[in-house]
Structures are given as C-alpha cells and as structure tokens.
Image (spheres, rainbow, N blue to C red):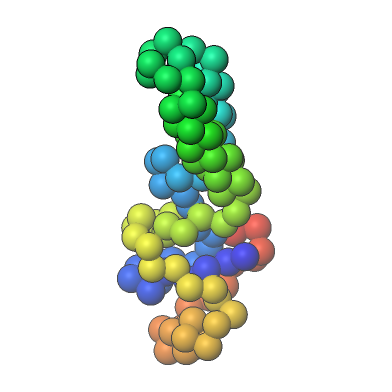
Length: 108
C-alpha cells in the first residue's frame, strides 16, 4: 500500500529501520536462541534461566521475521516515521492541497 509522508510529501512504500523488519537479523536471533538453550546451562549456570532467555530471544527473532513481510513504517525519502495511507482523508486533503501526483502501485 502506498503511503504519504507528512513531512516531505513523498508518496510510495515505507521502509524498515536497521534492526526492525530485517529477516537476517531475525534469523540470527533465532539461531542465537537455539545456542543459548543448548549451551545455556554451562554459560548461565541454570538451564531453566537459559530456556527463559532463549525463548525471549527467539520471540524477538520471530517478530522481526514476521515484520519483514509487512510495509515499513519509515519514509523512504527522509527516514522519518510520519507515513499515512494515501487513501485516508488527511492524505487526500494534502494531495489535493499541494497538487501531488500518485505513482503507480509498484511504487515507481
């Protein structure tokens, strides 16, 4: 879905930040969680504590992976978190007021 940045008037798809929505960071977190559970008893002095920490890290990794399939929340032009859907009333008013044109759905 196309979005409008209320700061710089960019119309297009949002992007993800460095650590959010990155499938590689999410996969790395899941792998780290497995290593924590496997070796955690030795490192953390308690296997139960290692499982709890491993589950928390795995959960963060899974959320990161799932977030990578959603639209980004940062403007691809200015990097700010000021995006609104182009079909909202506020966006329609801004587009009409500033005489902006909508790109095609591919975001080009």
